[in-house]
Length: 355
Ligand SMILES: *Cc1c(COP(=O)(O)O)cnc(C)c1O
Image 1 (cartoon, rainbow, N blue to C red):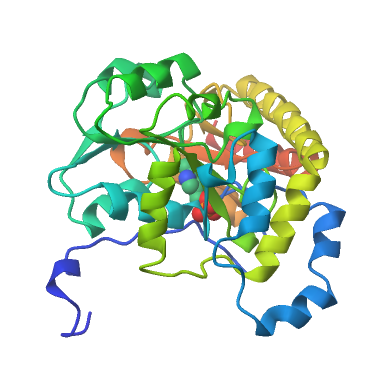
Image 2: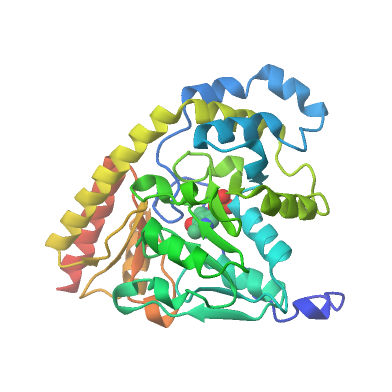
């Protein structure tokens, strides 16, 4: 820390992203990326002609892409907001809607970025404990008198709540914004997007990083009432008006046009998820029910930290947190069948050593 850092950031604990080794020697199951490459049309969209136009700024309104998303989700362009990854969208949410008078609530075990933004903006915040088995109880959020952020399915647990439960929460907090982070919605969950036209206080957040194989392109988006989108726009134009680059915009349009390809990939991942859970059960692992492209699992004989380290030593990266409530557990991204077979083979070795 230099002596120049603003005092208000002295205690800030920054988010720690999952490891991103650049040498590719690992089977990488630690940050929930897709094992599948982007659709062929994406490669074609990022062509020489598009690169030739990189001397020009991109469309700050991102109209072509917003129209494409609006058409795909059956909403209007005025309902769509684009961000440089949904992490940036989260930043905009906290900056735009939360303050001393509008505190924020989120689950105590959830995406690690929520507490970082709460701390960055020095927000009064409530971390709501999950119930038995990491279950999120919707009643814990009803009428809580705060803005709310819920990842559905939740991370790192993979558990989902129903659209009816979300509607109850949204309905009970008409004077607060409820943001539902649907980063993993396309792996078997049920999206609450249809509620957007009914509730002006609901903000649904999605990303191209997981289901759409575009983590490296950095694109997230929100769908919400035009009034909320207008507020987000105000903050966006006060921070970074050209937040989506040209190549990502072109790639994203081709991505939406290739939806069947990605839906097929999701089917494969869901099948690999069922397979992995079943194989782990044979080894005595306890795995939470998952609607995401990852599982949260623990071995009765090998502590989470040890499993993580032993897997890493064998070339397989998974995610582990030291936080006491979840220290027994590892989060494992569901990759291709080949990747999961390597993971399972290494797990069998580690479990055998522990016997
Ligand atoms: C991965 C993830 C994000 C961030 O996605 P980006 O669009 O890559 O920034 C947001 N929320 C949750 C819950 C995630 O797991």
